Image (cartoon, rainbow, N blue to C red; front, top):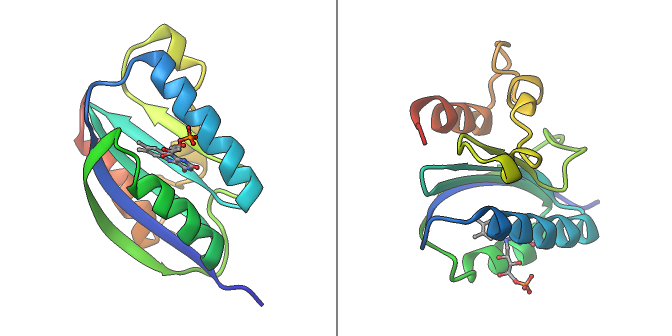
Length: 141
Ligand SMILES: Cc1cc2nc3c(=O)[nH]c(=O)nc-3n(C[C@H](O)[C@H](O)[C@H](O)COP(=O)(O)O)c2cc1C
């Protein structure tokens, strides 16, 4: 039986991302994550990222290495890395939520999943959900 793991990190974009750069990043990320059975969510606010990824530990490690080696961001700090019982984002090869006001990116903006999937209003708060919620609530674009 494979082991399911999840991790959360924060990092900063090297340059403020243009909408088409976000689109490109998400397309590449979603394709590869789908191939590796990795799911999660990427938050982007004011030049800073927080990403939550989950999946079988071996595949998760492959994706995480690719992410860590991407020169498009810097100052990566891992905040959480642990075994999990079940996925929080099973439907999402990579959900994306931003507060940037941008028409072209808004079609990729899955803000509503923050309420649904993260259960902001429920008392069932895992540490990853708490990290994501705090990043989202306390940062403004
Ligand atoms: C903040 C951030 C999050 C990323 N998340 C993922 C991800 O979840 N999965 C993935 O495969 N790539 C992710 N990437 C993109 C990869 O780093 C990128 O695809 C990689 O650099 C390889 O580029 P290529 O797809 O052109 O080969 C992320 C990049 C950044 C900056």
